[in-house]
Image 1 (cartoon, rainbow, N blue to C red):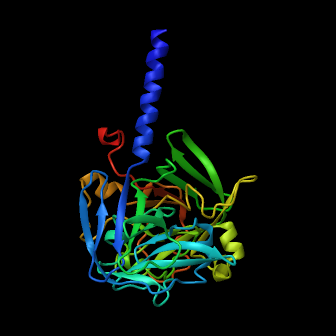
Image 2: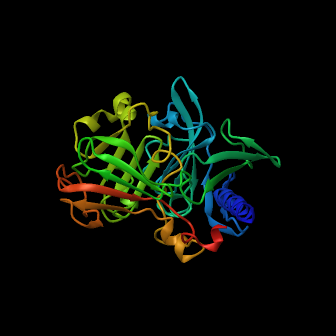
Image 3: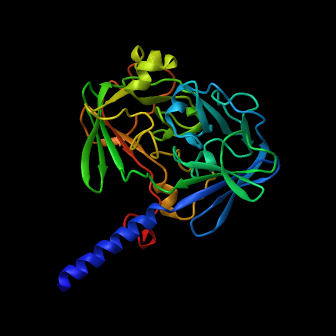
Length: 354
């Protein structure tokens, strides 16, 4: 009887700890007023300044890029070194968005007048170590009351993004066999699980805009229809993209993914839902991570919340991605496996997690 009681107490303790850990988040505050300070509020209440607002949006952007429609309204639909996109709602099968962009950047998805311009380098702050996961809830503080985001913010409103510190699915690593029918294997506390199959492997590197602001083997962008990985040092263009099958089949702007070698296309398993906008790969999964002058609260979070991508060449040992820039169609011809490490905040099993 005593053993059963102790076991029940342990179960309740573990569940409560897990729930507490899952509720930990960063609160990002972006005032709708030029000259105001952008802030990150940490779980312990510490407030970190991330720069200033230079310009505020006067309108929304519709129709936005195709994959935005696979996100939830009033949430982050893309997290990248050169832009954060926020879905307001879906109209006529296309997303209506507003964006956050660094003051100097290339962000074609953010149309004129529909974005906040923030005084921080691309790839840092909200676009780096403090970047929100896709799917993060977005609200507006208006006259002291918090509301869902339903339109362009008004002067003196505050945009609030609450984002989890770690990947919400519990997945900490994903391996991809870079061949037709290759397995996409996710690793979580319950062990490995095949979650998708490769339809078209990636063999080349391309000039993806924005990769100039990220380092090799790191996440350039993540949204409901793409994972973009940089293959060149910062200040140099070069990268690959991983995308789900429906996006590749139905989005007119992705037609080149079936012709060129710079894209990997993956498909859900039979009788499984589409991958677009779903965990563990295309929602609540990846962030660009810290670089340049980003300083996260501790050493572990600085490196743990900085996802890394490794590869195997000809089935060999795991190593850094090859350093390749520009458009090279056969640059990854010998890459047989990819490995994506998902963001974490504290050291695994740290007392801080409880």
